[in-house]
Image (cartoon, rainbow, N blue to C red; front, side):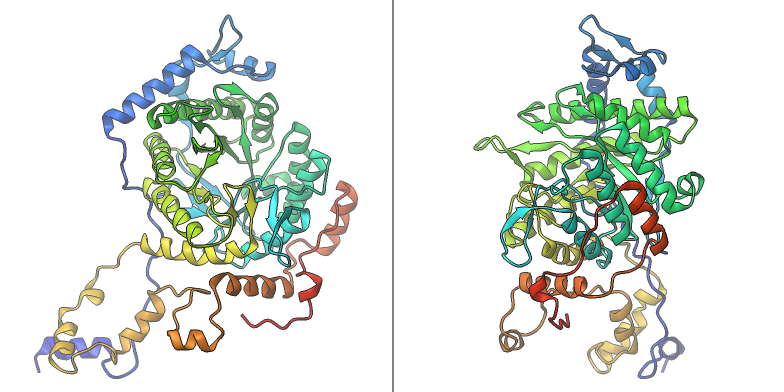
Length: 523
């Protein structure tokens, strides 16, 4: 036996104990998909600058006008706020290109702008798929809390952006504060919520300061951020949301600067025109954040969030599941990558009403393209159905498997002496003829491979013997098992009592339906 073969056997522990295999770097790398060439990017950027400087945005509140005009913006004869190219370029050169969002448990922090991709929930669904009737009904605060508990147990869903509206609470401020508290009570992952008014921002800010221990502690590691839709396309500020954006910066809360143009309805029907307008509208929000941060002496913690959506010409409604939507999203994110800004977008907005095959292929297509285009933060990647109008708790479990597969497919490939090793290939080929008995095969199968939690890899016979369960049923059982288990105490009981009294918070339940409470589920 040659010296090389002998050393290879000794190094690999042939026919003996496998050498421990270090966990490989599974960090997911986005980017690399370029649907726009350099010339196209330059033309889109120049078009966005022209839109901002010549057309501007209507309906800016007085406080925003004052802030922008002092920095060089102008107010047109028609009352539109116009942002000069020099101001936009200064903002782009000054904004940080990375941002860290925090969880409240080890391993849950999210680094944006470093080439890694994070996927999670999102939306404002008015309906939820009921666990008992399997029919959609109005969503409640209980549903928000249950969704947070499910997501907290899903390893491939990285953050929890409020996915549905608590329709059992009429007052907007009360709904938004209760939603924030329910989310923070039920998941340690980073939480994102919305605020429709300055009063809601103030209440949410005070809530998170209390949970953190102080404003300073929260600002050092912000575990909650705000989704802000500051624009009503085409090119009009939402006055209340623009004020929310500024107030959130003043309070030290990170913001997702979101723009929802609908191709063919509230933005041009061409992808190029839609991306140009969306880029301009999103840049306007980033300018506001930068100006507000300068005024208040806070960090400009903002995420560039273009979310252009496609219109189905047959209905006039939004359609999130097609190839054109995936391409539109990828182009918008490529602009964010060009600017070097932390970015987010929507991907996974399937048109399917049920967690079925249509749901799977539509979500996989749009999420994969958004990841490959370089999005740092992908919302609505799990749980939502029916063009974001419905949420299914079972979808979180199914989509967790899907996301695990997508993320695994985009992790780095380890190329080293240990993973190549032609000598080991020689030994297997010339002796037993396979690699099944190699100790490293078992070790690597445990360290390098991701196994689905509910995806069924059994034989046909085993599947039939088990009653031929469909993936939805397995996910349904998993949801009930999680909700029937003990809930983690993420906020001390004493503080919960204080906050409940101080903010007049409503009770919520994360238990499974009464008819399932006594079931013993082993999933």
